Structures are given as structure tokens and as C-alpha cells.
Amino acid sequence: MMKIGIYGGTFDPPHLGHMEAACAAMGHLNLDHLLLIPSQIPPHKFLPRETADGSARMEMAALMADGIGPRAEVSPLEFLRSGPSYTVDTVRALREQYPDGDFYLLMGTDMFLSFTEWKDAANIAKEVTLAPFSREESGSHELFALQREKLSGELGARVEIIPLPKIYPISSTKIRHLLGNKDTVEEGGSHLWAAVYGYVLIHGLYGVEVDLKNLSNAQLRAVVCSMLKAKRIPHVQGTEETAVSLARHWGVDVQKARRAAILHDCTKHWSLEEHLALCERYQIPLTELERGSGKLLHAKTAAVLAEHRFGEDPEVCAAIECHTTGKPNMTTLDKVLYMADYVEPTRSFPGVEELRRLSWDNLDQALCVGIETTIGELSEKNAPIHENTQMTLAQLKGT
Image: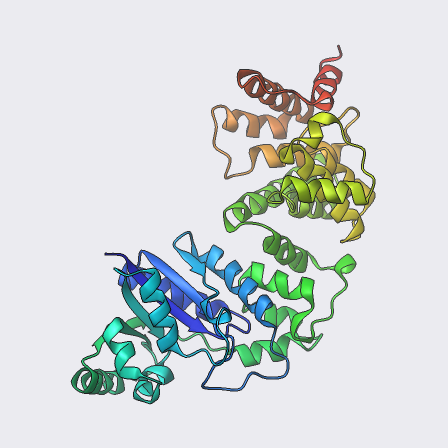
């Protein structure tokens, strides 16, 4: 039987407290699946004036679910219904969707202690195990024990208390306030999963006002995180770390190397159609090989966004554009980004350690080995090789 957690809320915005609680529930209950279900119209409270619209809250919750892991996902159930988002209706719909599901309804302390006041509480209790979060520092153990006994006796409820190791002292209300003040935007963002913060910045939610062409390094990282799958983020972080180290070693502008590394894969998960549309919009010339390959196009479209959306220096954009294929007459910055992407700490392939060492000893030789390795892998797959890659290798070898 599949163990499924149900975690509802306004998620306005979803913050690190929500994320920590969700991860604690997955571990304590050994859940097979976790559903984050944003409320359309919560019956227990009024939505404030600055509330993000439903689609934004859904997307932020989806970003947080991606950060939690592959067993978590966001569900639109309560947005597919009109009227208040009553839990009993959601549970009934989930029972139809998962007839053999073993449901655990996650909830905060206040919700647990007032559960008998919920609409059709008895029917909810028949379908789910109540799973309230108990903050170990809150001293609510006695209240929880009494409520568990009461709900068991009156409703036959099953209760599984989820201990939280620490109190996360922030509310969505406070975070919205911090985000809406230009002097505390960064502080507000510090309470959000990076991808959620980036989404807030891009869309100007909660009164946030930032110039996308003048973002701090931290803001740019967050914005890029919102454009990526969570599994790609460690690679980008590793590329930034490596690019900065190599830039210092080879006398390259560290800030340019950092910004190029942060942005180099920002369109990695776009569809081929999205890549082609952006290239058409900015009249980027493409070869036939490029037109059929998102892997090749992501370097071009990331460079376009770096220039036109984020206002980056031309040298940064040029390095991003050639980080996949290389190009003749590469600058040292171009080479630094290419090799940082190739040998950053999460990379694991035969010979990577030697290539890392070579990147510090002889950058051109490292680039040559890297390109030869790439060409060899493509040849084994009978895949076409980009002309820039071939010309770069020929130039490096002096042929």
C-alpha cells in the first residue's frame, strides 16, 4: 500500500519552514509520495491583499516540491474546484485517485488542536491518519497527548505525531513584509528555497522591485535556480566555484567568470521550440545541426538572456555562448568557463582528476584534452560534431 502525505496550505509563499516540515514528514512516516496542495480559497482565513495569484502559488509550490525530491509533487486539486478549499472534498477526490492509498494528513499545531471544528471532521478521520507537526521546543507535548486521546475516543482518529527538531521562527506574513521593503528583500529571500526566491524576483511578487539587469550575485543565483531543475543546481554551483578559482589562477576578471558560470545553463531545461523561438526573436543565425539540438542551443539562448534580460557584459555573454562547443580564438575567460563546466566537483568520468590537475597547469592543454574527449564520445555515438569544436581543436594543435 502506498503511503501518501497530504500537505495543504496557502503557500503564500512556501518557505523553508514548510520545506523542513515536509522533509521531516517524509522521513518520519517513510512516505512513498508527498502531495503539496495549495488552497484556492482557504476556509479558515482571509487571503491578504498582497496574496500572490493562484497560478503563482502553484508554481512556487512546484519549485519547492522539486527541491524536496522526486517523491514530492504539487497537486492542483483545490484549484480545479470552485468555492472554499475544504479538506474533506480534497480527501474524497484523492481517495478516488488513489483507492488503495494510505493517507497521512499533515498539519500544524493550531489545525490539530482545532480539528473537531473542521467541516466533516469525522469523515476525514475515517480516511486519513492525522499527522500533526510537533515542535520539540514548544512544550506542547501534553496538549498533543490530550488531543490525540480526545480525537481517538470521539472520532476513532489515528494520529501519528511528527517531531520537528527545531522551531522555524518565521511566517509567510512576515516574509511578505520583508520582501515588500527594498531594504529587507535579501532578508526575506533568505527564508525561501532559492528557486522560490528567484521566482518572486522575476515576477515581482509581494511588492518586490528589482532591476533584472542589475541583480546582485545572490539574486542572480536565485533567479537561475528558479529556471532549473533542482538536480541541475549542484552542477551550476560547482561550475561557479571552479570558474572563480580558475579565474583567480589565470588572471581573469573573477566577477565576469562568476556571472558567466551562474548563467551558463539557465536555459538547459527549455524545449527545442522555446530555444528556436528565442533565436528567431533575436535573429540568431543557426546551422542545421543547431536547429535540431537543444543541447547545442542552450548555450546560445543562455547567452541571449544574459545580454538582453540580465544586462551582462559582452565578454560574459561570449563565454556562455561557446561553453559547449568552444570556438576559434577563445579568450582566457572563455577557456575558464569551458573547463569549469567540464571538471567541476560533481563531474565523474574516467580521467576527470587528471583533467582537473591539467586545468591548473596548462589551460590550453586541458582544453585540448577536453575537446578531444568530447569528439571521441560523439564519434562513438556516430553523432555529428559541431564545426566550432573541430576548428577549436585544430587551432589548439596548430594544424
